[in-house]
Image 1 (cartoon, rainbow, N blue to C red):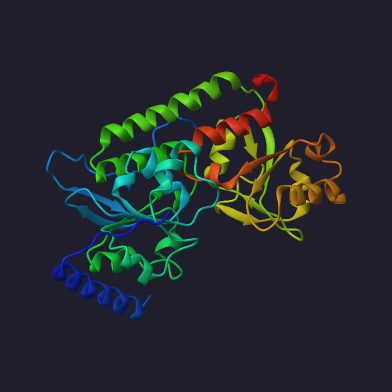
Image 2 (cartoon, rainbow, N blue to C red):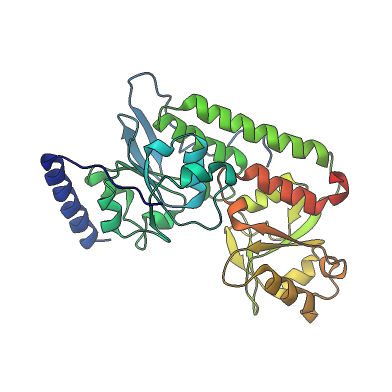
Length: 339
């Protein structure tokens, strides 16, 4: 799977050595619906005319991309899949941090790219790949346990981008489209970005047409993990997808993206359906058995009717899997409409 890096000239090697030392020094010194227009526009890039720089504000930082990156590293699965879906595998020199299997249609291209780490690579490993661009899906990628801040990378000549839709409260699919548009502009593949967005919209519209009008959304509880207190989705992308699929997250009034709640709150909000997030150390079957045998939940409709469904975390991340997640949710909420 790993491919050899190209041989560099002596001068480039010297420059890279200086860059590596500088990076390490910096580190040591301190480390909805598919038709609704996106409300958050902070991350939107200026259009890229032929031969022109692209400037955008991302994660509160204004950054200019004079040319399209040639040596990109991606730090999370959902942004890796965006790059691959845009046909940018030949511009990638490393990936990291998978949550799930790569989509089958992207696997062949993915297998050509070096995997730098199972989780986040160290700064030394990142710099050894000699990237000119780093694309993180989560803020943690540019945090203390990640590869360093966007500002630190900029100081050693590495441009970066943080998936804005993964870093804001209450993102919708339109915010994901805004990120895809920005990556298209940064890499000067705007047409491919538009094609990808239109493909995703078309697939989601097919699902929505089967759902039809929903007069009374089903109440949904998202179970991620936790026995004494459940950890659940709140004001995040999954909640937006549930709403689009004709459901209502019973904890959509909590402003945080994810929250710890009580079982008493779950019972009082009386969910019709429970979504089990396929992620973490416990298997789906373990989570399912725990919920079905928990006495406090015995009388809620979701348990009485055994309406428990599974959603992989990879499907609910802000990437190209929005249509997949929407279909899974819609089929689980309204199975009769998909027969």
